[in-house]
Structures are given as C-alpha cells and as structure tokens.
Image (tube, rainbow, N blue to C red; front, side, top):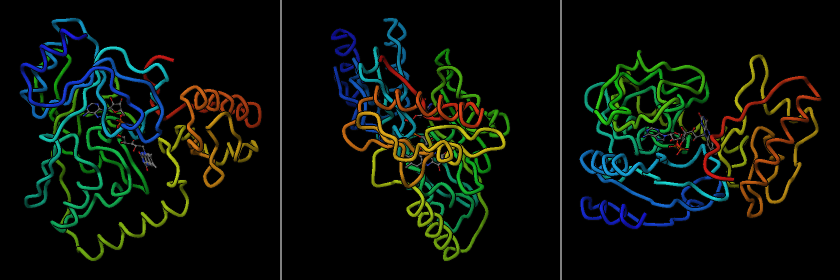
Length: 301
Ligand SMILES: Cc1cc2nc3c(=O)[nH]c(=O)nc-3n(C[C@H](O)[C@H](O)[C@H](O)COP(=O)(O)OP(=O)(O)OC[C@H]3O[C@@H](n4cnc5c(N)ncnc54)[C@H](O)[C@@H]3O)c2cc1C
C-alpha cells in the first residue's frame, strides 16, 4: 500500500495517508482503520486516484459524511475515498442550485433559504452530505431528496463521467440506481420553488425542534437503525417488544426513541451488531415482523 500511497501523493494535492482511523469520521463513532485514506480535491484528482487504484487492483469505498454507516472493528481494506474541498459547494441561481457531492445538507438548505427557495427545509436537520442523500434517497417529514433533484453527475464503474436526469435515478424508499455498484456521485442540480424566507426559516426551526424533541441527538448514532417495515414503524415494534433501554456493551436501544441504537459508552461495532441481531430476533418473536437494517454495515468484523 506504501507504493500506491506514493503514486497518489505524487499526482494529487489532497490528503493521502496510510492506516487512518475511521471512528471520528462517522456519526456512530465506531470502526477500525482504512488501509489507505485519500481526499481528492476536485474531479481531475478523483479520476487520477480511481485510475491508479484500478491499475493496481485496489478496492475502494466512498465515504460521505459518515452518518449512515456502521464501520466494523477491523476497518476497511483497500482505500477509503472522501471527496475534498472542491466538492463542497452550493450555488443558487434563479430557481435552481448547483452543488457538489460533499456539501452538507445543512449548508445546502441554508443556501436555498438565503436564495428564498423552498423545498429543502426537510433536509436541513439530516446530518449527511448531498452525495449520501442521493445515494439512499434520504427523506424526512414528508420530503425526499428525489423531489428536488433534477440532474446528477457521477463517475460510472468504467471511469467515465456521466449525467443522469433525476427522473432516471431509480429513486424509491431509501434507494436509487447508486445503491448498487461503485458509481461516485460528484455533483447535482436541484430545482426548487420560489418561497418566502421567513416561512422557510419557520419551517426549518419547527422541523429541527421536532427532531431534537424526539431523537437522541446527544448520543452518537447513525439515525434510524432499521428501515420502515411495510405497514409498521420500526421504533414502535421495538418499544412493544420491551427493548427500550436494552444494552449490549456500550450500545443501547435509545430510551428516547427505540428506532435508534445509540453509542452510550465507547461501543464497538460488534456491540452494535449484536444488539441489531438481538432486536431483530426479539421483534420477530414478538410481532412476526422482519426488521432490516437501514444503516449500512461496511468493513471487516
Ligand atoms: C441523528 C441522525 C439523524 C438522521 N436522520 C435522517 C433522516 O431524517 N432521514 C434520512 O434519510 N436519514 C437520516 N439519517 C441518516 C443519514 O444522515 C442519511 O442517510 C444521509 O443521507 C447519509 O449521508 P452521508 O453523506 O453521511 O453518507 P455516508 O453515511 O457516508 O454513506 C452512506 C452510503 O452512501 C454512499 N455515498 C456517500 N456519498 C456518496 C457519493 N458522493 N457517491 C456515491 N456514494 C456515496 C456511501 O458509499 C455509503 O454507501 C440520520 C442520521 C443521524 C446520525
């Protein structure tokens, strides 16, 4: 890996390091190290990195803001790519915004608010990046990213840059065409509606207050641990199974919102995985419903 690191360091200005701890790069605060960590600053650098990795048969994982991930304790083999500063932008013009994949949803929705554009209020409290939100069609309070995305540019598996219309992104409940395969989203166009700034601010405040009231935001987590099962709510099923506050190691089913597994005391990824397993088994016995993780589990256990 030292050789690959040197090859990349010679060709890009962004950060390139061996054995980087991923714990602090995720909201769950779990996980081991990445063999190689690379932060390309722009599209040219990203394409160069991908080319070098491909030529040397090094697998890679694309890390967004790390807010929907459970990274396992032995970390990630190969390279972890995190898009750098050149992908962190959002520019509003008329009724649309052009944005880079690593911009946070908070910054993106603030840009919309400042341009008096409505439609992104739902996203202002989701702690992910635009790329991660498109990848899994993030949504909250009746809104989904699919409602505002009109174009996505990405690097396809063959290393070419492509643009796809929002309508062709295969958006569904927490899924898109990006959920399968190694496509890397680099930027997107969002189309919104003209709105009233005071109303936009009021809606954002209201939604964020509701979030703070209902969710255990004071603890590390990756948001809702499980997908919403058809016809049910995961949190309600977990609560009915008597699991609120159930703990394994440093991982706990939140007492505030049973749909969240939280890291209360230096949980390992194994603690979280064991608790996920226990919750799935108990809910199945109690209500017959299968819970599927929404959190993406990556790396070596
Ligand atoms: C407190 C809390 C509250 C949350 N509330 C919500 C909510 O209300 N609604 C909701 O939908 N989610 C919620 N989440 C989950 C999370 O914030 C979203 O899923 C978010 O969209 C993940 O984005 P990310 O950048 O953090 O992606 P990451 O967690 O870094 O990655 C998730 C997946 O996306 C892929 N990915 C990331 N960027 C790219 C890219 N540029 N190109 C290709 N693939 C990419 C990664 O490879 C990975 O497979 C919450 C999480 C927390 C911690």
